[in-house]
Length: 274
Image (cartoon, rainbow, N blue to C red; front, side):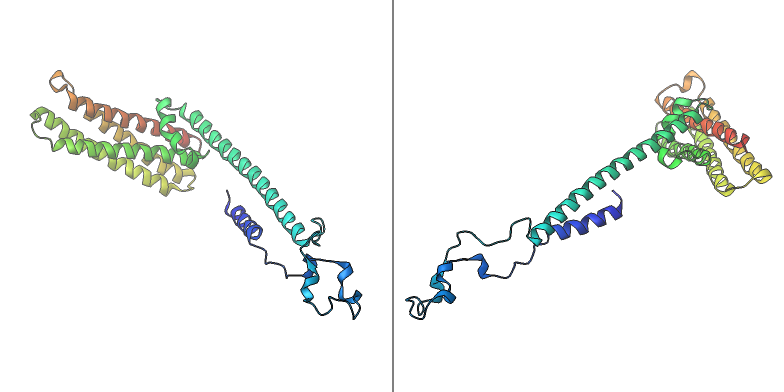
């Protein structure tokens, strides 16, 4: 719920539930027997010298204003009606906002799905980018920046994983050499993807030759990163290196290669339109 709506509601509720100061006590709340009014008593009336309050009897018909004439009652009624009206307005506004947000999110997701048809792995593309639909919205520039950032994130986590493998003991010499090579390759990939992310940011709203220059740099670095990833997997070729380490590294590198390939495809499409 928007902040201004909460502020208005707080003020109204405070006014509604703040106790109303008690009214001044009035003798009108007591029923006075008309036949016993002092103005009607003669000097010789037996009660003239008695307790003056003896003529007051417990209220039989309390002389209060009728609800429709009581200003306090009317004020509270007005406040209650205003609160109910405000709550109804806030509910409708909240429903409209929720519907608007849902509609915007659906439009962003559809935009991502349509864009991912240009990639080699569209299902993976949609899966990896839909999480960021709100920030992507329907911006082609934000789409490629997010796709590249996802690739960099996957490459960094893979680099950390491979680094831990280089510290394992009891690994076969050939496996250890292959792991070391993979670490160097993924390190290069991370460096190139990081430079690409920075290049896209520096591109800003460049146009013409400047725009193409930035895009060309990004395309070159991403392509080189893809080569590094493939080189790592190739280093585990042969049955002698089959095993859990090879399978784990291969699975991670293949995933990085695919999200990076998707990012490059989106960037190529973006670059061709400008």
